[in-house]
Image 1: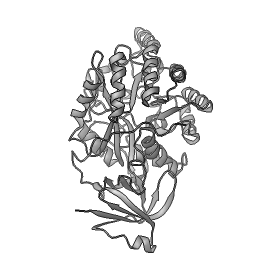
Image 2: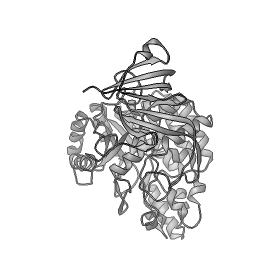
Image 3: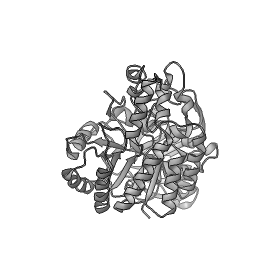
Image 4: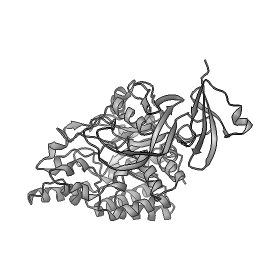
Length: 467
């Protein structure tokens, strides 16, 4: 049975074009586009017609950095794959790439299998995996080749968190050399964790225990130093590098310098660094704990440099690093010791709307919005043009977006499984109205019509964004 849908009368926005067009969907894929009102568009017929007059028709968002059900700091992220992907859909995101974790002493395969078991049959939207490499050895390096073959083509390493995820420079270099051979992309959490641990110990010894000190010990210079070191290690290995959650202007400068040298070095930032700051970390009565994440929030003056980096393409992607912990019972584990506050913020539902607000505020253009939130993450992680655009043959992951609707972000109304919003009370213009995932309505005129198990694992090719 063939199923057909037509989306009529909207402004179709991709990373490259804006056109008033009708979109024909057949069997879960985009079959054709034609300018609205033309004979070609009038000839589109379907069982289901969606009226998008006055609305944007955009590709579903691709969030390349989420942590559903992630164990951290003695607790586990509050969103399951079921709740987290449903919330993503409410926010106009139709694909996530989550992180499977290799335990120290364990294999990549064991970690990947564990994450497949968590996600399979539970997701409302499509998903892929990156692999966190915590234990580089000869067996791990061989496994990297096998994972690339089965569509897990990116590997995250940590210069932070000694004793947990940390890799030293030698381990990083070996993994980068392997990635240079097998086409994998190394993703880097770039902070000097060894130095940071010294500063944490010293701060606590001085009695500096409040959440705001989390930001003060994780210094911007130590993010910049690690970013520089990761870039040079990647250069030695001849491998591309993707630096996650860039928060500091000094780190952006390192990325810009490397890109000016022609290196395949890429940077991601997150909404929290664009819209929040150390002012939030300093909120009284332990409220600042809600904003503890790593890399940490920075003083407000860093925001302008991050926006500039997004405009000049020194930063290419905005992902969420969605890793929610409830304030009650989870963030509170760090009362009296900021180093015990679980690191992470909720955001998978907010990203597309916050970035549309950036369009309204003239930080970025409409097409750049789609580029950094949909097209480039799809290309970076080997899913384009199946994901990230609206074009014949692409998956019909499509969002009908009302650019004029106003909303107030709040824990009262969001769908993430967490008891606070990092953006509580923030007014934004623009809202998701209808979401299709592979042609199937997941959100229909602000009603959830999806179901767990619709989303499927999406194998990825290697990075499509290289020079």
